[in-house]
Amino acid sequence: MNYAELWFQALASDFGIVVETNDRNGLRQALYRARVETKNPALDNLSLILSPTDEAQVWIMKKPK
Image: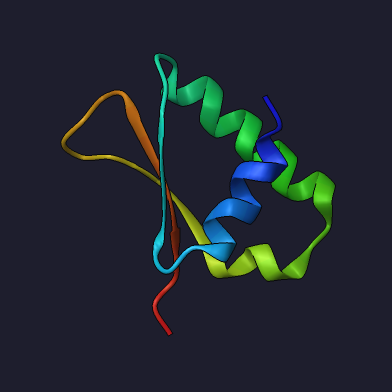
């Protein structure tokens, strides 16, 4: 899986994206690593959120302006 691509999909969306997973902590670590490796400051406008209602979801959401 290309984790950096997920960040850019969220950046291109209106509000963000939902990523389904069976390992939220592993996905979260991989996503943070990919964001650092891209060295793209535009990704600083996104937040990574563990869904409070669904244990299988990680949200990559745009920060409010």
